[in-house]
Every structure is written in structure tokens, then in C-alpha cells.
Length: 149
Image 1 (cartoon, helix red, strand yellow):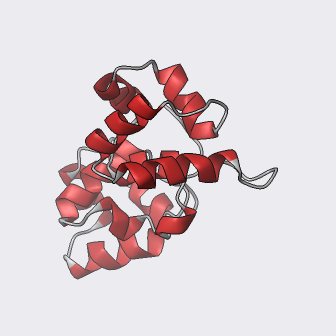
Image 2 (image 1 turned 90 degrees about the vertical axis):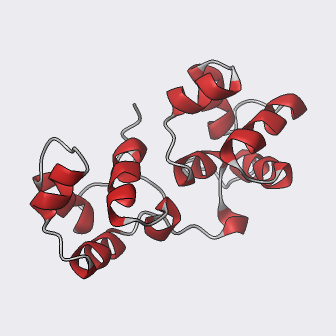
């Protein structure tokens, strides 16, 4: 599972929504089946960013879409961002579209061309228009040097 920083994650939004719901960090962790309540505070303070599957659990508890906590404008989204916005890990998405996790990782890093049939399957599973999937892949392929995918 990837440990990279989640692009666009807004810990302050998590704190605001948690507090608006009247839920403590410890209770949110318990309700989302996280191993430690301490991690929620680290996410809120920007010390860490969550793994996508854990954020998906928290978002469900708070009754908000992941897009509420991950703010990336549509024209700046990379292919991996689309997956994150749907709360899927690389292995889960790869299995659903019938390719290896390694192949999906290469697509998300822009190291491999996106075949039209894979773009169609991604669009179907992620519930984004195929044009958005293709644009997100092109954005990651043409990103400036040194910009993480």
C-alpha cells in the first residue's frame, strides 16, 4: 500500500466536519475502525496524510464524499487522484479493471500509455467520463519534472 502524501488532502476540513458532527478524534477512529485514535489528530494537523481506504471509512462515518476532504480542481487531477476520489486502493482498482497492480501503478505515474480499452474500463469503475480519465492520464504524463504523481 502506498505511503506517499495524498495530493490535495485537507486535514482542516476533516477537523471542521468532525467537530461539526460532535465527534471526538478517538470516537471517529473507533467508528471508522482505525487502529489508533491518535492518527486522526495527525491527519488533521497535517503531520500525516491518510491512506485512501482509511479516508474512505472516515468519510462514510462523517457522511461526506472523499472530494470534500481531497481538493484538487478537475483540470489538475492526475489518474491516481481519480482513484483516490473514489476511495479505492491500487490493488482494488486493478482487480476491478482486470490488470495488474504494477501496470496500474505505471499508468498512474505516466510511465505507460493508456490503452483505449483500459481507459473505458477505468471510466466505468471510477464513474468519470472517459475524457476525464484520458485527460488525467495525459496530465500525469506531461507534468513538470520533479512533480510527484
